[in-house]
Image (cartoon, rainbow, N blue to C red; front, side):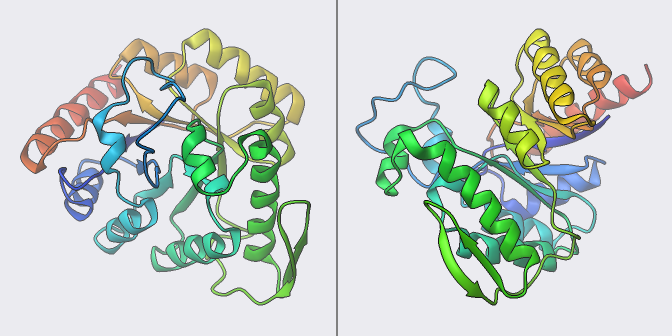
Amino acid sequence: MKFGISTFVNDESISPADLARAVEERGFVSLVVPEHTHIPASRETPYPGGGDLPPVYYRTLDPFVTLAAASAVTTKIQLFTGITLLIQRDPIITAKETATLDLISGGRLVFGVGAGWNLEEMRNHGTDPRARGALLDERIEAIKALWTGEPAEYHGKYVDFDPVFSRPKPVQQPHPPIYIGGASDVTVRRVIKHDAGWIANPFPVEVLTKTVAQMRDGAGRDVPLAMFGSPKDLDYWRACAALGFGQVALFLPTRPRDETLKLLDEYAAKVSDYERG
């Protein structure tokens, strides 16, 4: 099992370029960043983590601009969206952005996607929360068509376009890996439907165990597994490794440069302890 770094990069934190360099220099395999286009000032949707919404959500940088900056100063780390809120994005534009990032990075994009939780945020983008699952499915399929077809077309209930030429194409073939977030039975079916991987939150081990078993049984295959926000807990890491996680991205608090570098040194030392057994 490999280790990446997941974090909210914002206008008060270490810069994307400095962060990416530091992540790669310390031997981590990925930089995983989330997405929130905005936070509605009047919000009734409860924060899934409980309590008040953490301040970092209000200042999050755009994930693709962040990862493009990271790409320019690194050569190895995966550039992982954890997760792209695809129900809030135009699929044709997103297909171009992701293919461009994969091209300029030399094939390092990992496309984590999901439906999100903030209902008011969705509505601001014209998305009916009741249809978000079906919309997510269609936009995944449409983007895959745009990545791989020449010309490409897609005809669904929510996404519909006649044959188009969309360039560039991704470097990775047939397309960049797709990981889907969530933990419901619907998520299990969606991972199977799209032949995707699963990007989990740091759920209790029993939840991970049940969900992974459901995905493998339903898919009849090994499902690629990754995690956003893993705690620094060696026993938890061992449990994830036993379940077959290919990587877990340790959660890095959003801090200024010097404090971030110190934390990354501590994380790298902890990983070394784990790897020594």
